[in-house]
Amino acid sequence: MGIKTILRPIKSQNNVYIHIVKRLLEENGYEVCPLNKLSTYLSFNKARIVNLNWYENYYYDSKMANMLQYLKKHLVVILVKRLFGMKIIVTIHNKISHENKNRELAEKTLLWLIKESDVVIHLCQESLSYFDEKMNKRYNISIKEKSHVLYHPNYIGEYPDSDIIEFEKLFGKRNDKTMELLYIGNISRYKNIEILVEAAKRLHDLDIHFSIAGGGDQEYLNEIQMMVEKLDNIDIKPGYISDESIIGVVKGADCIVLPYQVDSMLNSASVILAISVGTTVVCPAIGTTLDMPDEFVYSYEYSDNNEHVVRLCEQISRAYNDFVNRGEWFIKRREKIINYAEVFLSQDGLRDKYKEIYEDLLSS
Image (cartoon, rainbow, N blue to C red; front, side, top):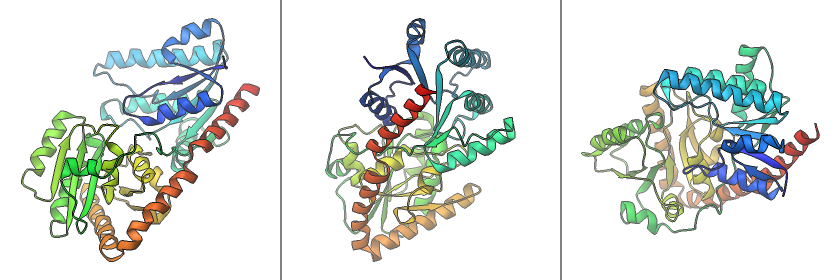
């Protein structure tokens, strides 16, 4: 058996990233254990490193329940580090919790956790600069020396391959002259689906079809369904796409469009999924897209919802112009995007970087 290491969470129903990291650690020879069995491994003092993801999030409605969870989280970290001498890795996924009600507590926990950690893993360059500034303000320290930027790995081979027939099963037969824009992912308020619906209204005269596929917040989903009822250029299919179909659905779109709120977002799994099959993206300038070549994404900045609609429409129109007037280039770009994902977001490269980080921690 290899050296024990703890990964939290060790699995996630809707997030492929954790499955990839677990597999890569195992390929490096580690026995990966869940945090909920921490006491078993600590009793034999065999777990050497703990890698925490989304540890700062709070999900209870009760303030008292969240405060008890806050104390528990701190106690676990203190036990791990000071009593048992384990090394702590914190992997940062967002600027702050997407849920407004617990943001202050989540931010306080995350910044404290970064201070206590031995290594901080960032999935994009913006994450490093953003949190280094935050830590300077909160604790008067820089985290650059213990930080590593390990780009979010591609999703190539993570799902069964499928063809665009899966897209057509959901949204009907494709017309090659009509540009297909797709939102895919969780239907939550921070994903700004209503901004996309408004863009569809304003761009009604262009030969663009908008599609929305995903599950999540049922109340919000109902609101979106009511918004699109009278629009003939947008369709919505509630429910998560199966693993067997998702690659074909993404292939069937000319662009994935993701009108995120930028106050909390740093990284996007949907962007990674899109480029892993060669589909370009229309998305605000978040950490994931800022690290990519400009020709692969149609990105933009905005300051409020009104400007968001305007900037989103501008970039969709730009993509549409490329689709109509640079059709051959638009198609050939798919191969360039896939090649970028294979080379620069390589899972093999990430495995090697993890190997180096873990070996450095074990030898220190």
